[in-house]
Image (tube, each protein chain N blue to C red):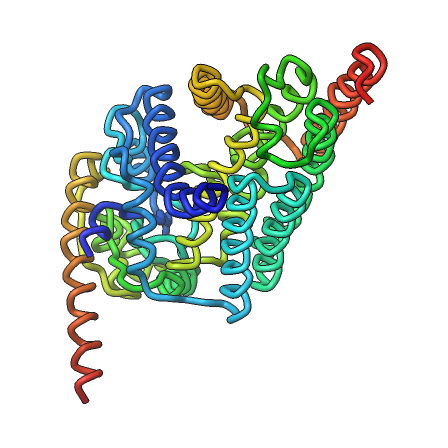
Length: 289
Length: 150
């Protein structure tokens, strides 16, 4: 059964992720008073990228991006198979390290700056996601996603602070403004194109597909907080996840990009205050060991 | 191969334009014309782009820049010269530092005349360029097949 879930993730995640991005682009366009591209536009983009001439700066960069894709698929498959959430978090970081290495390998100033910024984003994201795993463990006494998802009441009831903190740093991983420092979706332009500057054609397509896999994985992690085991609980959980994604689009369209100092300061402060307060409250007030 | 037409990404370079055409190019992105309806995105990166939109005539200082951007774009690619200056250097033709239209430096596929070119005609030019993009792709595939035969 668990292996089936993992297989379903490997096959369906790019489709769901691509559709989510397509919806995102349409909703974004509507928020800006435009019509926006067709719903399937992200798929057209990626299929086109695979038709283009393959231009590489260094051979190794393609290998790193392949590793990025493979480790992201591995991370997501592990999560949906009900595996250990700690391993999921560490594999997710490893996947991003490969993207950063790929950008460094290209040896261009723009992709170098993109890689540095991506590294900062990983640093900003990391404390909160580690606290998330600790919180999930304290609330359910298990690191296994199967056990965590089998909760009778949505875990957000025990972990409101951790949930808010995670929602805050989620913007980083979804590559949305105000935290899209290293590279962004939509037609935003920063230092050329940040971490993806030196990637073109099919390699860029692979980065995009990896992002779809990652989006579905992240929404899965959010689901652990809002979903519960009953059929109604599952439906409410999925609706809540989509609502949070909509909220992310809203934030994306309303806030300008911040400097990296602000990204680091706020995400660490929020992780420490909301995360540790939440864990402390669970420990001392609710008596959870 | 139908996907090339559905997702043309553009890089826009201002050679030595008076900014009139640049503003019209950017007007295409606004809610009024919204070229993203056709999947057109203004990327700022030649390595991601399919269409090179260039405004203004070529002067001695940007010859290398234009060549460099053109060569960084992966095949298949097309060049659209927007405005009369990009087409033939227009009123700046006689200037001491102006080389001429864009086709003096790189091959141009579509000329969009006008001073400044209107957003409607720019979009029309891009749509014409999409047809050429498709043709180039087919020609490249044919050449590849013939190469394999030998």
